[in-house]
Length: 483
Ligand SMILES: *Cc1c(COP(=O)(O)O)cnc(C)c1O
Figure 1: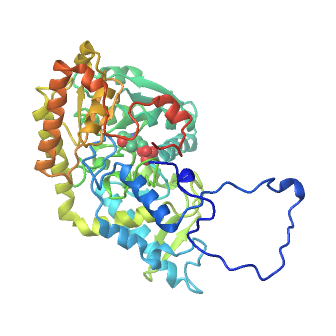
Figure 2: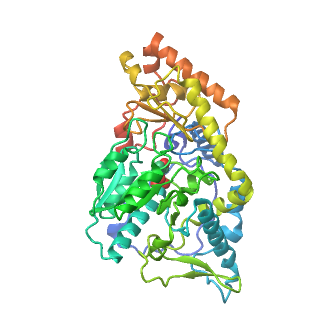
Figure 3: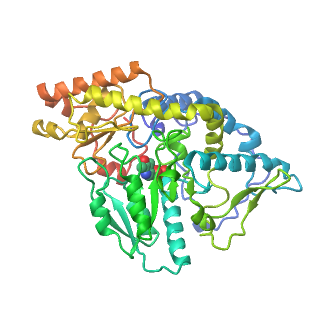
C-alpha cells in the first residue's frame, strides 16, 4: 500500500470550491507566509476512501479478533452504548450551559447521569462516595494519593511520606505515589503471590502514609491476605489505596470497601464498556470511605430535595480541581447505559464468566507453558515463557507468532516479577469456541518452538511490515510510512 502522498496526481480533486467573489486580501506579515505552495495529496474522493478503508483493515482490533491483552480488559463493548453516547441531547451539550434557570433543563439529564452513575458505583464498591472526575486509571491513582496526603496533613500528621507498594502492583502506582509527593517503597510478594505480611508488618511505622495494593494483583490473583493487610496498615495509622482498575473479577461478588480499603479507583473504560486503546478515552472514578469524603475533588453533583441536580464546589477541605469541567462525560454515559443494561442481577455474571474463562485458558495451557503461581486465578492468568529461552525464543517472539495466527497478542513481559511473562485476559465476552481456537494456536506455537524455533523468529509474515525496531517505533514513530 502506498502513501496517500504518492497515490494522487496534480489537479485531482474530491470537491469543487466556487471561485472567490471577493478580493483576495493577505493580512499576515510577509515573514509568516509560506514561500511555496503546501504539498498536499491531490486525490479523488474515491481514492481517498479506498486509501483509508485499506488502512483501517490493517488495524487489528476487538471488532475483528480475539484480543487477550492482560490487564487491559479488551472485552466486547456493545454497540448500543455508542448509540446512546451519540445522541445529540448528550453529545452536543456545551459544558458551560447553565445548570438550572435559563435553559438548565438541557443539562439536568447529563447531571443526572453523572449523579446516578456515581451512586451505582458507590453501591457496587461499598464506598460512601466517588469522584467521577479522573480522566484515566493513573489519574485516579494520583487523585487518591493526593487525598491520602490531604487526610494526614489535615490531622497534623505531616511526617508520613512513605507509600508502601507491593511488587505485584501495577507499574503506574509508584509513579502516582511519587507525583503526589510520597517516596515509594517496595514490599515483596510471598510464595503464593500475595503480599508478604511479615515484611509489610516490619515496614509499618509512623512515617508510612499508606499501602497501595492492586486487587486482583498483576499476577491475576486475589490476595487472601488483603483483609489482614488493611488491618495492619490501619493499626499503624496509615490508609489503604486499592488499584481496582480491573473490576471485572470482583464486580457483584466483593465490595472492596468492606474489605477495609479506604480509597480505590476503577477504570470505566475497562470494566464498564468503553472502547479504549492507544491512550484513551478513559475515566477512573475514585471511591472513598467516609473519612476521606471531605477531600474529594470538585466539582461534585448533588441531588436537591426538589429532585433537581446541581454542581457543588463549596468543600473547604477538597483537594480542588483535578480536571477541567465534569470528567470524561462520554465514558461515564456509556458506563451508565451499561449498568442499566446489565442490571444488578447481571453484575455477578460478569465476574463469574471472566473468572471461568481465565481459569479455562490456564488449565488448558499449563501443559505447554510454565505457570509460576499455579492456583485459581481471577480475570487473567500469567504464564512464563522462560523455558523457551533455551531455544532462543522470547515472550515477544510468541506474541509475533500469534499475530500470524490472527490474534492480538497477550500482554508480555509484565508483571516484572515473572520472567518472560505472558499475561492472558480472555474476558467474559468470549465464547468457548474462540477460547479453544486460541488455545490451539498457543499449543501449536509451543510445539513449533521445540521443532523449528527459526520459524517463530521469522514471524510475523502476514503484516505489511515484519520486525521493527520497537524502541525507535515508540520514540520516533514514522506514522505516515506504511508498506
Ligand atoms: C490499566 C491499569 C491502570 C492504568 O489505567 P490507565 O487508564 O491506563 O491510566 C492501573 N492499574 C491497573 C491494575 C491497570 O490494569
